[in-house]
Length: 69
Image 1 (cartoon, rainbow, N blue to C red):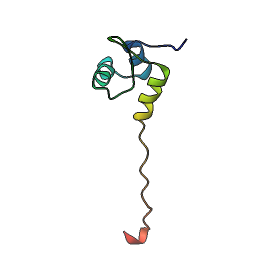
Image 2 (cartoon, helix red, strand yellow; image 1 turned 90 degrees about the vertical axis):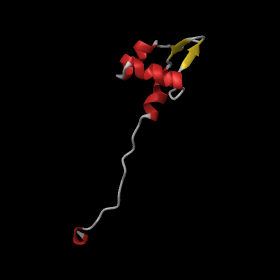
Image 3 (cartoon, one colour; image 1 turned 30 degrees about the vertical axis):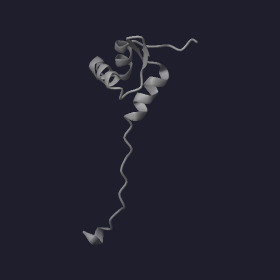
Image 4 (cartoon, helix red, strand yellow; image 1 turned 60 degrees about the horizontal axis):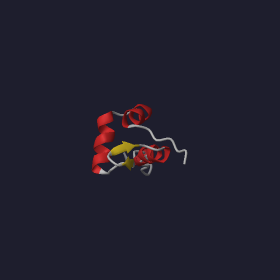
């Protein structure tokens, strides 16, 4: 297995978030992470999951005609 595992500070820098955000999310088990004993690490798949979970889709509302205004 040659998957690269990042430490919390490395993953935070790569994602552009704070270290505390990743620590809180991992402790609450609300973000994907890998535990090796008590050590928290983040794989490529974990980082992709965090980014995907934070994606916001646009809300498309039906167009109103100008006459109804």
